[in-house]
Image (cartoon, rainbow, N blue to C red):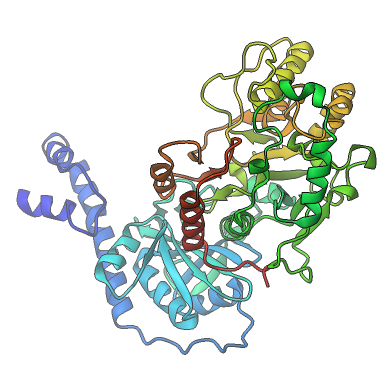
Amino acid sequence: MFKRTRKLLHSGFARPRNWLDYARTSIESPALFREALARVRQNRAARRESLRRADGVALPQALPADAELSPDLLVDRLAERMGVLVLEMRGNSAHIGVGTENLLLALKLLQALVPQGRAKVGARAIALGRRRDARLALRAAQVVFRARTAAPLTLRLEPYDPGPPGQRVSRNLANLRARGLFTPCLDAPGRTLITELLGAPTFEDRAAEAPVDVVYTWVNHDDPDWKAAYQAAKSLGDLSRADTKSADGDALSRFHSNDELRYSLRSVAQNLPWVNRIFVFSNCAPPDWFDPGQDRLVWVRHEEVIPAEFLPTFNSHVIESYLHRIPGLSEAFLYQNDDVIIAHPLPRRFFFEPSGISRSFLEPYGMVSGPVTPGDADYRNAARNSAALIRQAFGFAPTRLHLHTTFALRRPVLAEIEERFADTFRTMRGNHFRDPGDVNVTSFLYHHYAIATGRAVVAEIASVLVKNLDLRWRTMLRNTARPEVQIYCINEGGATAPSRQWHRAVSRLLAERFPDPAEWER
């Protein structure tokens, strides 16, 4: 009996469990032990049934090549064979729940309907014909099916394990809508909307109806018009202050493009499907792959937003101080540089609370202290200046920088900051290159101001920063593949240009991770 129980608990169909705890419980509380063992057997039976149904299924014909594919269509086809709970459907993305006993069948049906589609558990692609991969899918909290269509399509399938009659539970601890199901809606074929079960949208869903845009700032060092303007501005710079600037304040390496924008945008398309529109704020011509015929990716020139008296500018602190003035930008928006990559699907609530306040991903240590020092790192001097404004306005000294990752921002807060510190903004905006007198609005000032006024909270994130100046950059690049990493940044900095090996390794990694073109590519 003891050996059979241990074998059951360690079987490939069960989650790893401490069988000694079960053994002790069998002595201390036999009734509790029998109840737990019954659940293990029930889940094991559901997984075996999933394998059986997938092996014996008659697969449908692939959908016609000219069919208008949508998550709605695929969910309807699945609902003909099994119960499907629609947890979320937005654009070309859907999040659905199915019974564990139907998970592999659902994946096989999707693969037959859309042969170019692929299933993944985390970052690992799975082949359902291999038992090891099938069992991996059955142990996962979610399996993602992604199809390379004209507009890439994504379905997240979440298995619900059986419980007492009429009850089921998902292994996804992040399921805020219905991790526990107390209805037999998955026991028979058909489609059920989560709002039908709850009677109304959740507070999170209702808040999610407000659009969230993304803003990028981008420079292409090879753009001939930009290069001419850069050289002219640099030659006319204030040479009397040259010794006060940092070594890389106007270095060409700061403006280098390695086609990261294409892949950063693909990561947003793939992993933030709920995003509304994307704005690229630039003083360069769009890359060749940009399709101006679509309307989701919008190219915005500096002269459309920044007054002529402050142009041209090559100062990212100045450019970032104008983001909230971009015409048509949503009230809540995300901002990131082209070297920031979204590693896995992240929900809207990862960046904004359901109440609408933003989440700030601050470094876990304090690195802002001391006076402004000529020749010191630009970001540090800018943070010192920003900290002085916070100290004067609210009486406390902020010390934590924002991590080099995605920034969650709100336009009204930025406009309020601009109005409150108008003199500082106007002085900074006259600096064509980074200057010791700058403030860093998006990476420091906004977050501490919003926290001080109750419109932001400090949040946690699993991120990796890969820097070309770090001797361990190869190891750090490999670390970006760790399953817990949510966002990573591949950052070039310093006055010295990165090596060819760096550029080749980065290009290869991004092309492998994000091979699917986005809808704005031609």
